Image (tube, rainbow, N blue to C red):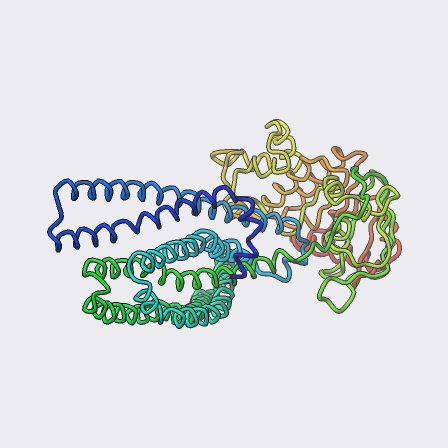
Length: 586
């Protein structure tokens, strides 16, 4: 029952609804006592020859009234109790989603998307069942069972009641044991479902790659293996679940036998009437549901307990990047000074950045070049405070970026990542993502600056074209330019382009860079790229190698150094000649 205590905050919040629901439930439980008693009295009246038409009519009216009141009571408790459980599911989902949005990238590096989705679906559903059906079975089993037992003991025979209830303690012991087993096995089953969920999400997202490499058969086999594991784990749960009803039914059969045997003896001894025994057996029948409800309650509560523990474990993960006390609530602006001794990504053993020192003046463009894994993206991640734990400082406008509120820092930054994520909506809405209420003219202006406007006009629906999940209907270059347009629409103080021109041709790249130069006068820009043509116009260029700055300067000064930058430049010029069919260049 631990989960019911853990959900105490919610029961207090919905106290009114639960009080009304439980009260209606208890009213129904009391009204259920009327029919067996009335039937017993009618049987005795028939046996004694005292039953009249008026008496029968009165009893029928009472039964009808009880039936109508039970109908209304059942409707009321369903609305109040089950409705509150739905509210709990909504509240838990919102908490989880808000928690997900606050987490740093390292959180998602350690956890799979499918597992997070399983928490927000299956686990929350199990907790919802606890707050709905669990409360129902608890209140119903206690109220109905209590009222029935009291009625049996006080109005018929307390001795026969005690005899009939002799097997019940054994039932409580066994169902409690089953419940503990169920919780452990259900936890394992939920983890298996999370794994299957993650596999499904990954396979659907990567379906193009699977088909390209002809791995459908192997992927289906891997999916089938995980699916079989889920079945096996849930079958272990089902085997425990299946023990509840037979155990309760067997024990309750013993209660019936005891009631019949000793009830008959009491009738022979003159301690009980036939009608009273019939009423007693009817009441014992009413106890069937409360007894089954106890087993059902253990089942629901232990499932909810396992799922609530999984959810709370997830919610207990603290944000790695948090605002400092007294954080500055202003948009940063000014020069950026980068002085990093070393930085290592979480769970890595080797430093990703070492001895990085440069100053970027307000309004200037910084180019960062280097081989894959040289640390280019790591610099951008630190600028956005996606990671901390480095030695040294990064200042923006003379203030360490750790002293700004995260929200204000990131509002000043427009970021175009390597992995261009587009939402399953229209092209226009994807560009206007940061400001959905912005005028269409400004959306078009941003698209023109990113040189995607003409492409958009070729689509039948123009800016209303649905791009599909993750922009599946667009080419790589089109996705890049839509992402650039989205960032430009923010008109950010600092624009970060992380190898964001790699999928466009040289002419389009040159046009986009020209637009950036015109539109971002006085604004700061950082561009990382493998292609030197994307950054050779920059005021300052740093060359990265194995996490260190090996060269720094502008395009001309770096060429004169005859170092790595010059080698990269000559190699790319040679590649350009080959692509152009061997023509010479000046």
